[in-house]
Length: 438
Image (cartoon, rainbow, N blue to C red; front, side, top):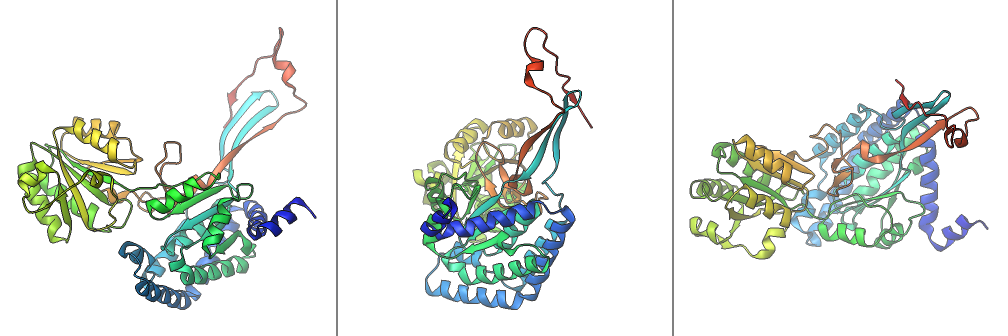
């Protein structure tokens, strides 16, 4: 019995991962046109299965109510006919994106007849673990196909019926296109999550999507590289030179539009000089939208009817209609607060002072730093990526919303004609030409 066969007996997920890797190798060899045809076939299969998918989601939603699923997770779980239709459009949009695999990033002559290329290539097998959000199944599966990767999906228990219906349709679409359906696999139990995290010889990248506690659990329990963010503690700083009308619209959009999103603001920082004028206007608009406000002592001197914020509130991701407010003395104070309590996700400044904005954008340590616009623009679709596999707050790339470019690595190819290193060393060493080619 081979080593891989023994491993498969000891861990059944090895067999799944092995078949996914084999399918990924075939997928990686397809032309861009063939991959796009597979994506269109997936879109058609999802459309045909739409009634079954919506019905499955309705059962998940019913069970979620019975299980008292947290409100933010319940909202992410919803996949009605309209949302599904939009997601299928998103599937087709991925086919229109440039194919990242096979791109020649470096083409260089090292010497006459000795040529170096750096070529983008798929990672191999992706492990995607997510809570709720069954629409992530469509986004990530399509991005995986486009980039030539296999994918093993593990949805939350609350979304199991929706995920099963979606993956069934996606695999049918791949089959219809003549592509090995094992390129997309679905796991359904918690035990399988832990087992997948141990497959460091078979899975090349783990992408967790869910709560900060969930992402931290993944990060702390695997040796596989992890792309993700544990927290979405985003800020809006209202500078002394802010235009209040603009600022109110930005604050309401960034907090109220989708409070459970990781790019919604959780803390509002206000310059002391503008606080007496700005806080009542901001509070009125936010409270009318149903936002509960918490404030530091300086904020509560102006907004006397709000609850006091605690130290923990500055680092809390509420994912709800709750917002902590702090008054700061300067842009430096805002930057210090953000770099101390923030999660390096997305932070914004509202100001008409270009120098202050430039300082804020240069010194805030975050994947996204915005001037006079909502943090809710931190999204792969809004960036023109077609869709995203997740958002990364790590320092090393990829960072921020990650689309197709985050699903490829690269390899160096060197072609010669009997060339040897000895020629280029020693007393009579031949020099390299190092000439970039078109």
